[in-house]
Image 1 (cartoon, rainbow, N blue to C red):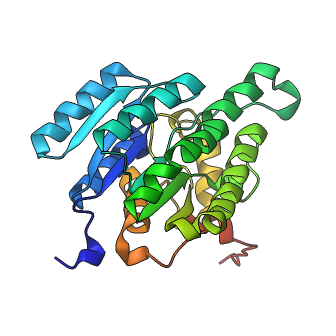
Image 2 (image 1 turned 180 degrees about the vertical axis):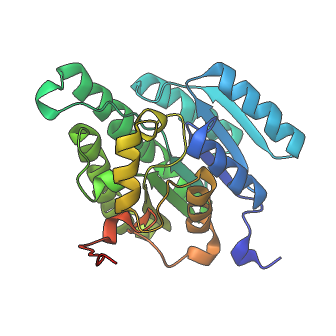
Length: 262
C-alpha cells in the first residue's frame, strides 16, 4: 500500500468515540491501520463499541473520561502516553454538547457547560498532547467544529461561539506548532444523523427549513464526516493545515436562490 494512504504504525486518541461521529471516526482510522485509544463518558456505550471493534480485528482500547474535568483530562493523557510509549500521531477532539435556547434565556450553568465541554477540553487536551505529538515526528490534530462556528444558528449562540473559537484555535496551533511537525485543522459538519441532532431533526418544521437551505437537501451521515477526518490525518494530507473545512451539503455557501413559478 502507498504509505501516503496508510496509518499503519500510527497512534490516535479520539474523544467521545463510542457513538455518533466519534464512533465513525474510530472505524475509519482503524480501517487505515491506526492504533486507537477512545475515551467516552458512557461506560455502556464504550464497552459495546469496544466489543464491536474487537470483532472487526481493530486495535482499539478505551477508558471512561468526562473531558469537561481538568483532572480527568490529565489522567487520560497519562494513560495515552503510557500506552503509546510517549508518542501520539493523531488527536481528534470530537466531544461536544449542545443546549438550544434563546440567548436571553441562557443561564450561567449553560455557559459553563458549553465552554468546559466544547472548548476548554479541546484546548487543554491539545496542550497536554503537544509533547507526544512532537515526539511522534508526524502529528495531526483535528477539531470537530460545526457550521454553527461559520454561520449563525438560531437558538445556539453559546454553542456557536465555542465552535468559532475552535476554528480559530486550529489556525493558531497550525502556525505555532508547524515547527514541531504538528498540523491542526477543523472539520465543520452540518446537522448529522446522530442522537445529539435528533431533537432538532425530529421537528418537522425545522427539518424542512434546514433541508431547504442545504443544496444537497438532507442531513449528513457520520461516516461522511469521518472520511474527511481520516484524510486530514493521512500523510497524503501533509500540506494541509490551519483549515476549517465544512462537511455541510453546501449549506454555508448557499446564497439567494429564486425558482420561477411554472
